[in-house]
Length: 188
Image 1: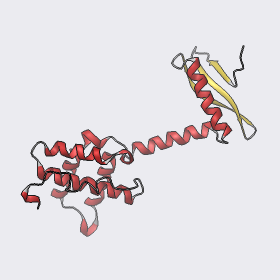
Image 2 (image 1 turned 180 degrees about the horizontal axis):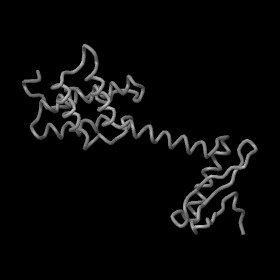
Image 3 (image 1 turned 180 degrees about the vertical axis):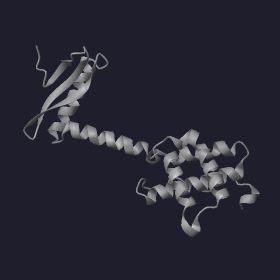
Image 4 (image 1 turned 90 degrees about the vertical axis):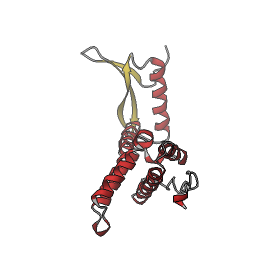
């Protein structure tokens, strides 16, 4: 029989079976939850245990790293394009002397909502220029050229707001302005 290297199956009084792995960090014994048996088979449990051991070898605590990753995922979930667009619109509505009028706010929210089906749920840091271009071209293909232009402008404002609030490195729409859109005579 091989060495389990800290991996064991905990059978609870209720009958549930949980994979656990024992390890030491700073001289203290700790246990890491690996998964629920039979959803996680032996091979997968061993793979997860080995990943945890690699973290330990690098001087990292697997439990701490798991909490950090969970927090990062929660933060990113709040950093979707739609969430930041909403935050941007709320800010602009109460922006002192530069505040949007009620009509401008309503129109801007509507135009940004046109992007929700394509990029709204994406983490803002993962959105590429091609994603924005495809979303705006969908509006443009319906003959709504002015709406497409304004939506691209507003999306750029949202991306620049994300840059200003340290949630994004750079605005992916900066190279899209006018060049990639249909240019009716009214735009010139």
